Amino acid sequence: MQLRTPSWQAKADAKVKDLQSKIPKEWVLQDVDLQKAKEQRTLTGSFMDQFLDKHELEILANDSVQLVASIQRRQYTAVEVVRSYCKAAAIAQQINNCLHEIMFDLAMQTARDLDRHYKETGNVKGPLHGLPVSLKDQFHVEGYDTTMGYVGWIGTYEGSHDLNKVHKNPGQDTYASSVGVMGTSIEALKLLMTSMLSTEPWNDDPNVVKMPWDYEIEASTLARAHPDGSAKEDLELKLGILWTDGVVRPQPPVRRALRLVFNTLGDLGHKAGQAIVHSLTEYPTRVAVEVLDWKPPSHSTANKILGAFFMADGCHDIHRQLDLSGEPLMPPLRRGFQLKDPLPLLEYQDFTLQGKAYNETYSDYWNSTSSGDGRIVDAFIMPVAPNAAVIPGKYSYGAYTEPINLLDYSAVVIPVTKAEKSIDKFDHDYQPMNGADRKTWEAYDPETYDGAPVGLQIVGRKWDEEKIWAISKIIDTALRTAAR
Image 1 (cartoon, rainbow, N blue to C red):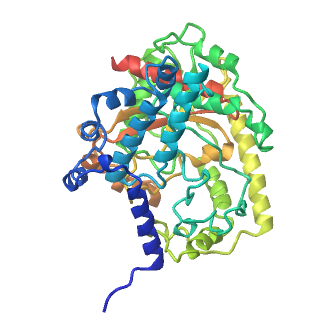
Image 2: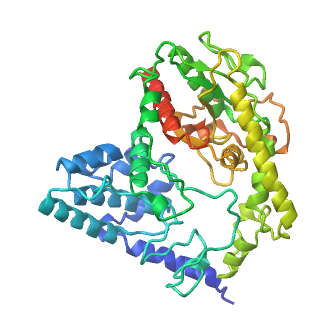
Image 3: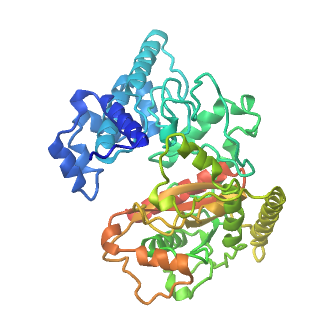
């Protein structure tokens, strides 16, 4: 008796095959290379570089700002840049299955049109002329699927076979998502942010606040530090550091990253505060700096409120999309995303009020940090997650970002260090605070995490994007200065 492949699996397999067909033959890797990829600890760097030529590597070594400038001064053409990035993406897809859609043909045609326009007019088309970008699979691009991973959305518009129909699924919008950007440098983030705002999106979307990039705030914040990131006298930044949310203690590489930032900022003259949750001997500092208690309202409260909104419909929308194809929930999600009764309206409204009250309490706390010297903390630094880079099946606690979402604060994530098995030892004597803490503690393995990148988030208040970007640039520069 032959086993039949479920229809959803057949559709998924066909989609994967279709994506593979969009990779040019000259970029297709050999079976021996694919096998070697499975044996690699790190797929980036030398392993991936072997499939690219010298000119392509030269282009890929530039960040976004450098690429845009190079195209404008005609050092590179848009076609050269886009082709290099498409090839790199094709290699990455084959060894890591990281793409839901491939748009190489569209990208190359657009690049040719841009080069032709620049040659004929002498003018570039916008601030991102020729810059390749990738989009999260939630942005609709005409002629391509946007599935968010749902098999039932393949070949449809969010499950609808009427491709001319534009609709939105009902869902909570009390804490709506927003467009964020990722880049390989701090400067790249500003380039993308200012470019998006230059289109004045508030004219097309009434939900967008009319707020152009404030260059004066950016400049005045950057002026508080020297080019190497060190503080200027009487202008030094006043920062808080949240070592733990009191529910799940970060794993050793993350705790070391926090100490590294704390010590670096102290060495360069900035005032770094710290949250006193455990004995201060756990966080030794090499210099005398002002130590402030960073004890905000419980982040557990924020997690509870936000979680109620995220699950308000009882997971019915998720299951409705899964039912389009019959695909099951992924194993890691089966426990937390079982169907439940939707949250009653009065409870929903009550959580709305709780969220407002939490926001006000947190704001009051932030303002209270001015006691003593009359200066309010500019920003605070905290983990993005309790672990370094995520290992599939080992990510069990995402609550280090949830309070920031609830508060609608500005945040920038920067790379700080990498896990080192010789330094970041497993703490056998640690006594977990609860079940979630125990799970994260037990999941840490120095050998497995060795070499994994560790990032931290720099958090500012609502609508403080320019200030928090500038502070992140100062901190990033300070870390690079200290590493020399």
